[in-house]
Image (cartoon, rainbow, N blue to C red):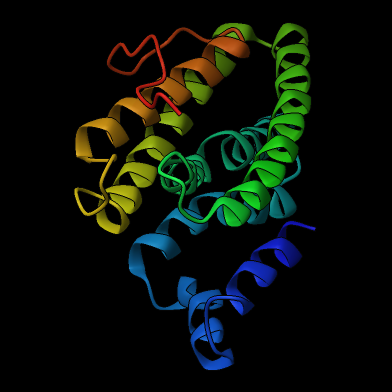
Length: 189
């Protein structure tokens, strides 16, 4: 459903050639590829060596994908809609974000139970290590693609929002906040 929604948005904005370029940009864009590889490699490792640690890492990867990776992009559209621009697109993005929030909540519950049943302090270290790398890659990507180029968003708000989300996600699974303190969402919309 998400892919169809994105496809609908793109077909209303671009011709078929431009759309194809955007859809397959992950192949050419080094930052996007590196960001995607972090999670894809978790799946490969888990398929090669099936154990609790690799399964936990896959859960963390899904959690970051659902609860961290898409959100600066979502904020781009919410930011435009807050200025009465691209309202229909923002509505589609809000539906997608609602679904991501549901998926994220599911992974939160699984991760909390998993940590309780296994070695909590060890798995805390694994979560912090993974989220540190995921945040680093999310910031590289978002600062490059959005950065200081969009009215209402800048490098500082992107960093603050990414840290806010990462801390919120870690706290939700019982892991201490590790990123520079950002207690509230920096975006009013």
